[in-house]
Image (cartoon, rainbow over all chains, first blue to last red; front, side):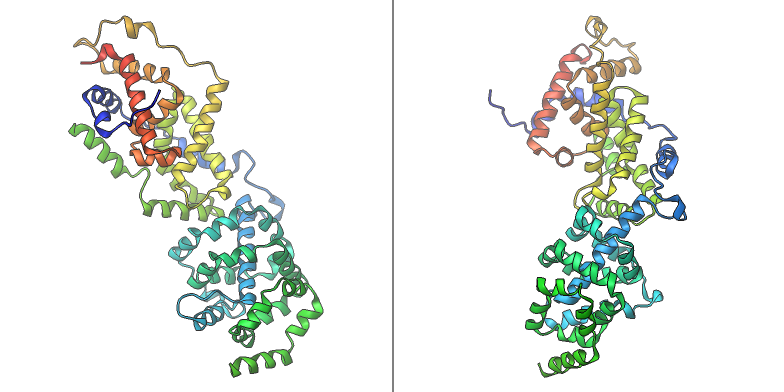
Length: 253
Length: 197
């Protein structure tokens, strides 16, 4: 039997209005007064599932672990973009260099980090945030102790507040950066040479060199990502001589 | 008619669902929870416990069961906050958790009581009929509906959602919502025909 399309008139007809009135007259019912308290009490740990590692001081919870996963994944993406170059937003490459400079983790002081709710909320609305929170592989790959130590939390939060970074995180390039191969390479590099890697990324000459499309393309290659896990390569990359060459090349362009 | 409009207006004013700003606020609260602030969940509980409890009550037909189902739904939602898609509405997401909770309870508890014969046997709503008696008849008739029909009735009349909002919550087309609502009311009308003025 085919169904006919029900219109608002049908639903508001006299045949239905008296039933609607009966339902509306009955009204909604007040939930138990203590319902909120019961729910929050259970969440606070009365059932025992909330605490996961009391021996570490009680501050580590299930959600804390999730946060670390998210923060770590976000940090890796930021670093990946520092290497591969931030996608151009708006006018041109100048903007991307500016965004890269603003990101510099090593130069952000704690007092400078004033992450405003609107900025955070904007990030939470992005596809990138959803992906980060739901990508099990990314979370597992990025929650190592070494990695957490290597990534400064205030810097991550500050970087997430940069609109260009938020846009970059939501871009298609994120999909590539999230590839397990890249993530693991960066994680390994941070674990073995955290200071050296961060020094490379923080170096202004390095960031300026990112303006070169050819260099950006080279740095974004899988081979470069894999090479990052090689300590000797990272040491060479962070050498002052190489930085001088990069700076000179950047100045010539 | 005006009473109904007032009721819907009050629903809107009480703001249980449903504006873009609220959706963003919900997402921000979820994010705070994920960042290690479990107390940020409390505003979500306060905001949605009433509509969710009422839907549960109409689906389950028992006050204590509805209370437990609502509590479990919130706790499960909290446990799985990391799977919440911030592009969704929080209400739609937690509603699905609540619905599953209710369906599980309906499966594991005794079957819904059939419509008592007095509903049919009584001669109709006399002047002396108390509201409570009429409401009891309505509650019983509601429980005689299929879960699918009860659900749209509850979301429309007891949670105050619009057709589009019900559509969004149930993941079905608005025309399907209207069709179900139409059929549900028609069935209720048949069950309660003796009460028609």
